[in-house]
Length: 107
Length: 119
Image 1: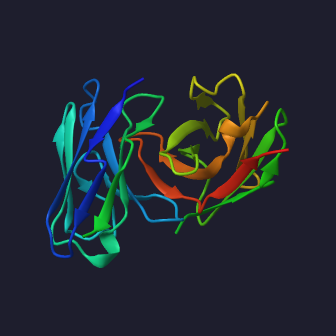
Image 2: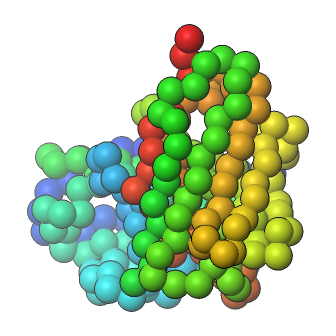
Image 3: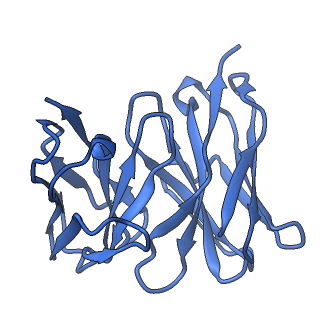
């Protein structure tokens, strides 16, 4: 199985901050990397697929980059509604696996 | 807008079979993978497997011996069964739509249903 490791696991941040979350795969996955946002008690929501393609309706302050084994999710100018847990997920090969999550908390 | 809704018993006894159904509305069940994902309390996400409208499936090897999925295209529904459950199967279970070509991402999710395994 491909293991996905995110860092950091948690982050205390403030409204208006720029945040970068990294995700590393244990083998090359080309651009088959997706990012999801999960707010407490709700289902994950697709933010970015194919490493850098913004899902329809997702604000442009979210962006993704990377290829191969290393990927990043960047949120410019954090908004109050962005405090949530973020997961990366590889769709290169099954079993499709997720990172352990990065929780953004209000400083 | 595609919507998915999970349904089924919320409490299952150890050693019994967990059964859930996902109803898809707002779109056809054809041409996509229909997926189950679970999340144990306070933990991360685990892909369980998918089924295609033809009935072809792909299960996570970690659960393969206990998982069965089926699809009913006439009702726009697909289902999950997990046999011989233990407390480790306690989780929120999500159904989701997965692209069957391209980037294979999960674009629509159900709201999730909490299933507890307990006597």
